[in-house]
Length: 257
Ligand code: IPE
Ligand code: IPE
Ligand code: MG
Image (cartoon, rainbow, N blue to C red; front, side, top):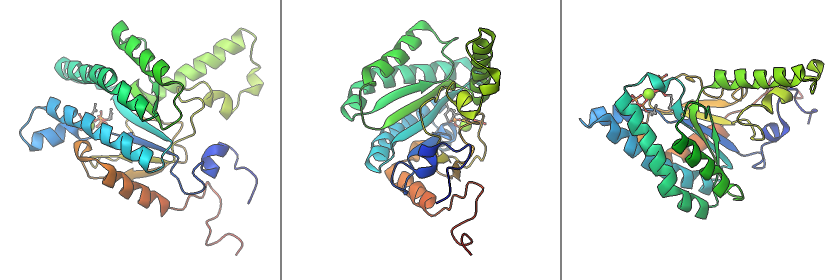
């Protein structure tokens, strides 16, 4: 084994799951609207069924050995949708936290929220705080909910925090390295995602985890999010395990040749 790969955090490079992984799966849950449209149903029904898919996926992820599951549930660009749809998405989040927190906690799930809290109403902020504090001691799967999240805003906020610390004389600008920035992101302390899945066939990141995705494997699946389940996750994990991650080095076939 070579020395640690520069820029790759050790826990990700080694894989906490004993070389099998993925330790951290991140999902862009896309296709709720199309799922509903194909059935002649309102988009809101697609979002409701999307929450059911999320419940299944959290259980399946824990069963399949995933330690961190990050889900993109509302992007900073989703404010461009009609107000009625935004209201529906927010009320689904409220209901999810209120109804599912006890059961998530029973499953040992620890909840972390990433994204911009400012600009959210106080009741939503209180709910998000409650979800984190009530599950903080749990030792099972960590569910990272990206809500009102945008990766560029997250990186800009980290840069701002570094600048403020430097201006206050608490940080030497020369000491700022990749870890210093990563430690000021919403995902501080969470290993980078090993696998990023996007459902619905779209093949783009839509401002999700831009920093953290540096060496993630990507999987774009045609399945629409409301249809996603444990079998789809198992298929994704099997595909991931067949990939060779090289981190800029040489693959197993050429190493030592
Ligand atoms: C994903 O489904 C849910 C959110 C973005 C909140 P969409 O609502 O984007 O569904 P499509 O892409 O219109 O099918
Ligand atoms: C990305 O999906 C955001 C979430 C899944 C929450 P979108 O459906 O909003 O992305 P675009 O607009 O197709 O890029
Ligand atoms: Mg979409």
